[in-house]
Image 1: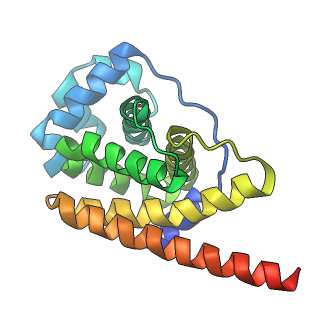
Image 2: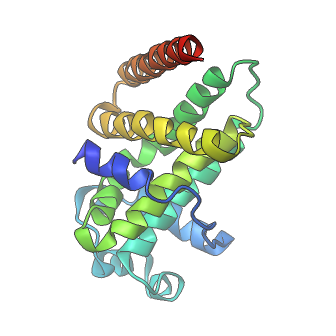
Length: 207
């Protein structure tokens, strides 16, 4: 999977609309993600009906791209719920915790999430991929209680897109080792911190 393509997609739709969802739809998504076939077989409408029955066509009339987008949205909402009780004075720690909560919550479905991402990587689904990844990045900042606006809103999301997407791909490949995922995330966040400090020093000198 192409990291540059995914980061570009995540930063091309900074404020996508919220996705509609329902308890019934969420239940079906969890059943589908938990089905071993969803992690071992390419996603098709036939697979969805085989796992969930005819109701799948009613709740997801737009096909597998809608299912994949809805799965990522479900993981985002699970992350927000898990992050609600986490407290830290440092926003970097809150961002780190939110990303880890998201990956931990999705851990039982890691193989299925890989298939979902493969669906969204199809060229005809570029816009769906963009809003899906952007929605995840926004959810991470929401979980971290970030209140930035304007240019800072944009730059923070552009920066986090690189961290989140690269960590997501690492997790898909190596998520069976949570310690390795944490170490990878910490390295990416440390890189961002060094770049931010350098930029702030240079900006101060120019000013």
